[in-house]
Length: 566
Image (cartoon, rainbow, N blue to C red):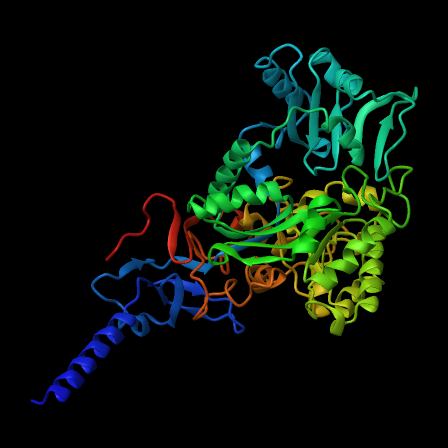
């Protein structure tokens, strides 16, 4: 045989071997019910993964040819698979911090809350701060906010600061007020309120920016070592729930540096879409340098700015167009328009995504007005990105006349289903029956063409995506209760709820081409569930557990070796 022919035969053999190798998957999942969340919401039995991405989706027979001697084959044994779940409103370090600090979530009475504080106090030195978070007075029989008087009874000397679960109110004792030099003559800061008793003295409750008057006196808890500890714990917590990406609402570049170090050392697996808290020096830095996108194989994006424009409904800080039905206040706007509008306008010019917290109908209208003004002054041809995907975080109470503006302006309503099943126990008292029609109107937004990225606002809520799924499709609390006038017609279908926790979250972060559905070419981010969320009885949805979580084809969580190679 001529040398040229030998070379040709050799080349053909090499190409055949290379093609055979290329067609062998690293991992194959089969014998399951796999909801792809493609445009048709297709369900298949199997998929194949190579180099962290999906290379085939279909029947068991269709992936069989991709199984080679080194392929890891996972027999799903009929279990359900969905795309990796996305929490589109999350406070990442707060979740990690919750695991180490005094957690008052779930307390059923003022007395129980105070007992936990007393136990924490027993471990402290004289004069040392006692801090915690998670109380909700609506969960207590008294329905009464705690005050400094309650705290003074158990801690007259150690300063105490306890955050309400919503993150928009704290209660402090007299010692903490003394350290912060807050007296009856102290003026409310812009966007905050110091509450007073009948004698005109501060009663220990501080709303929104007034919290900073005391918080600035707390010992620092933001060292790189502490940030690292909280981040690694939060990573574990999220992955165990089946989350593969979170949108981190309100961070800073010092924290981002820790994230980058963890990713560089492969010590953190969860994808993070980070939003810098503004306004401030860090937002100025982001606007000048521009976004950082797709770092560490699309694990980290830094492309947005988070601003809070009002408080929370529970603590009556949400800004309403008319006064609360149960108090002589209309809430408050945290920033004057002129303080934040320049940031919004510059974001359009710099390919930076704006996400602004607005809960009350007044705050939502204010943010829509600011966005509309910026869109008019910076038309698409003058924007760094003609599709800026500006968001309003929460969009909880929106005047019925303003809901159509979301679709008209292309503003994304980023909403947290669990807020609706927690707030239903007090929202009707805060709003009255007529305004309840403005609340948590998921289906109204969807019907007009909006998509809703869902989140939990953890650690405000637990952070379990199955609770969010249940809340979205039931509009009931976990006991099955829903109040009269709570508009069950606003709930989502199961398909919509699944999209809200997957592809809609990806789209809200400009990531729909790489994650959010189980389609060829996308990263193999997925979660195996112990039950089928599309058919499980409604009252058991929130009990569904993640058995295994994958990020880019890597098993990053396994609830006890459920699946083995075959």
